[in-house]
Image 1 (cartoon, rainbow, N blue to C red):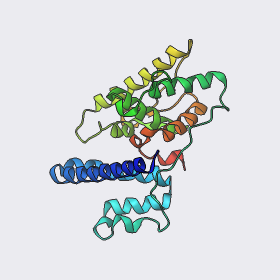
Image 2: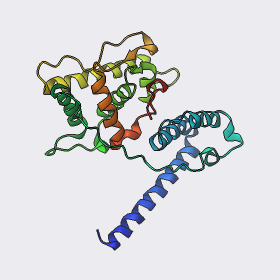
Image 3: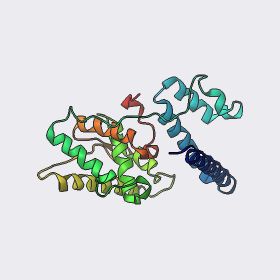
Length: 240
């Protein structure tokens, strides 16, 4: 790429960022309830994506979001040496997986990224595919503990007070079925991607059938361009 092309690219990115910031300001002014509902999740996701799991800073962030915002700027609570630059997470190595597990992983990658002949771009995902990525990623990031249904539904945007809880639970169930069916279509004789859910209602717990696959998928979703759709993992997952 020539110097002139690089300058044009930088200028275009600066313009885009400026317009995105203006868009956020417009939403905050015209739809304050919508902005307030989404802003906290956006801050948490952004910080986790860039700095990883830091219990000390997480505590400071919680206090700032609850009350300290009245007295301190967000910049003032950041560690002095922190750089909010996107962490580059490498795609997972599948060398430790046996052939069957690797085929499961490859089938899931194909689901979201397509093939060399027909690649898929996450910006073009439909709502169902987006939901499936969020559900797959959150359950994988939960490790052996998995993820609670209430948290899944919340980050799907279906957990608002007074919301349709049945719709949320049905969305989770449908996504898990669709993902398992996709893997079955690629691997004859494949049984289940997910273990049987335990518990009831909001406390229903969802897990992968195989922890090795869950660990590999967790690194895959963290390395994916669509990882910003995912919240920070539950504390019990103990991910850095």
